[in-house]
Image 1 (cartoon, rainbow, N blue to C red):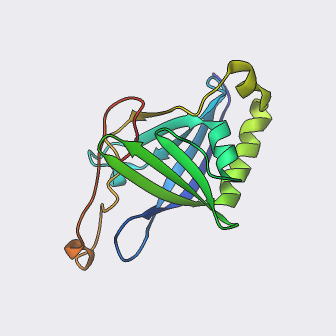
Image 2: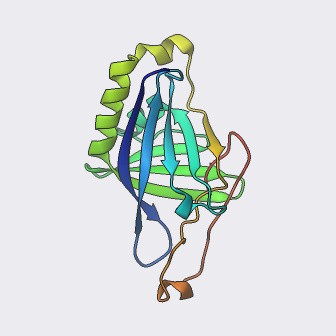
Image 3: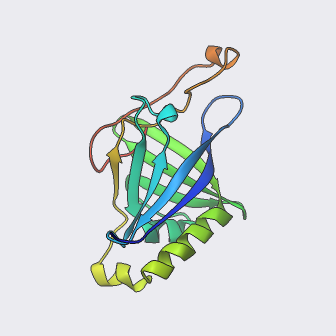
Length: 165
């Protein structure tokens, strides 16, 4: 069994709704796949009520903490000094989440302690992303009656190498 790092984190789902919705996600790193990290979204925000797992290069997250990066299914950029935005693209749409940057930095330190950064350059890692399970994030799940009048824009996807929508 390979060593893993798991860390819960809070994200704000960025939507057209008047108030951002905060959900708990799990940041996961597996030593058997040293170039990638995963963000696991809970079933209650999934369009098909299954957890949504995104995998992408950990060096993409590292770089995105400092400056905008990514030109594929996952894009990451700093938002001020204390937040980081991660944008997931799929054929069905786009999901945008905002993290506090400090937990992401702590998570990356733990990941790099297991497998140093040189692993990416030695393996020629790219910034590819894959949704490994689920049908996308429903950015309007569990809204209350007042929010029910707000137009909904949930997106979904099932294709590999595509994003949450």
